[in-house]
Length: 111
Image 1: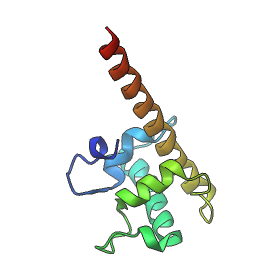
Image 2: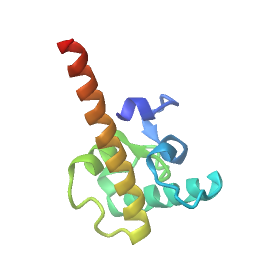
Image 3: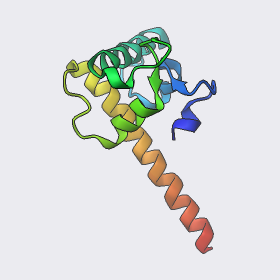
């Protein structure tokens, strides 16, 4: 899933990369949505030093950080409710997409 989101091929994800993974029920302008996503990424990186990008750009999410969010239940500790909600949206969408891809690939093999 990370590779599909990394359209820039930078090896890191930013707000633009994750737009499609975050709910936007109020149809916020993209700049506002991107700001919420960026704030969540920065908060995560500040709370989790070991996952910070080598470039020190806290607005970017590394593969290791993305993986941690996907597989760890307590990834949102030390984050605000809004930042946690944004990253939980990312997690849920990515897990669903991965499951659908796996199901589709298995269905095609069996037909």
